Length: 137
Image 1: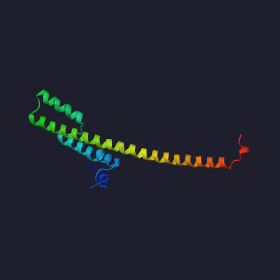
Image 2: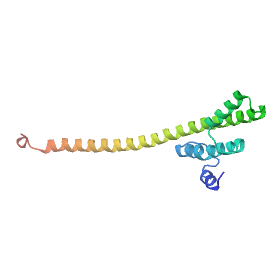
Image 3: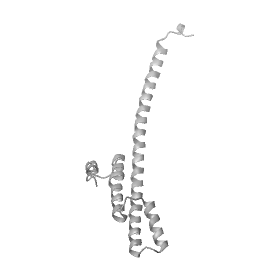
Image 4: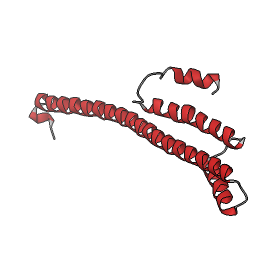
């Protein structure tokens, strides 16, 4: 894992993932780096789940690969599948965390607008009571 990635993740060391930012960092930095490392170790290059899955299915159906190679590709396929699943779950948590932050800002803006309208309504009622009847049309 690159040192810059380790530095970014060190701020979350020993903590439970409870915020969207933490979920994004673990997904994009921790799990993704491990998936790339497993792929490099398994087939010698960075690869995605779909590529490895295609290689596995081709090797299993083609009959040209040895059982050890098929087993190795199957294990890598399973590792990348689980990594993709975990990344998807964490990125969904990040998305909902972001939506929650936006909703909190919108709630505060609505509260401020409501208070402003309440104050304007009170000012209008006070103004009506102070205005003499002859001044109204």
